[in-house]
Length: 164
Image (cartoon, rainbow, N blue to C red; front, side, top):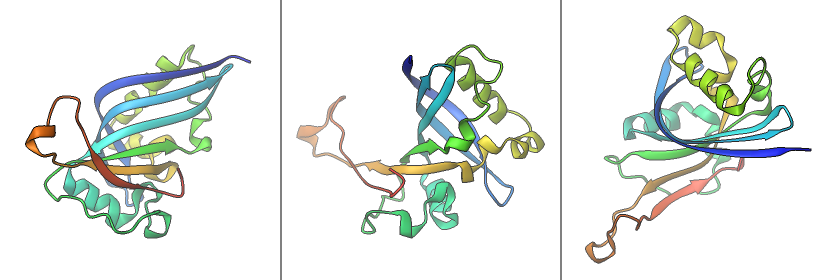
C-alpha cells in the first residue's frame, strides 16, 4: 500500500460556485493532497479571502460554516484584514479527480483548469461547489507589538469547526 502526501505552496486564484449560482473568488495559498495507491484520499486548501468575502461566506454559511458548526462563537475578526480558511474536500468530490491523469500534480492542475472555465462550466463541476467543501479552521493574523514583529513572527486567532 503506497501512501503519498504532497504539499503545494501556491498563490493562485480559484473560483467556487455558491449554491445561489454566483461565484466566489479566493486565493489558494496551499494545497495538500494525499494519495493511496491510485486513489486520491484527501484534498485540502488553505485559502485567503478579503474581509468582504468572509462576511459573505459567514452570512451564506458557505463551506458548511453554519454557526452550529463552529467550536467557538466569540471570535470577531478585524474588518480590514484578510481571513484564512482551511477547507477539506468531501470524499464524494475526490471521486474522479484522478481519472485519466497519472499523478496528483495533474489532478490538482485539472481542478484549477475547471475553476478557470467559463460560468456555465463552473456550475457543471460539482467539485467546484462550496457545498462539497468543508471549512475546518478559520483564522486571521493578529497585529504584534513592534518588538515582536519580524518575518517569521506571526500570530493568528480564529476557530475550528466540527468538520476538523
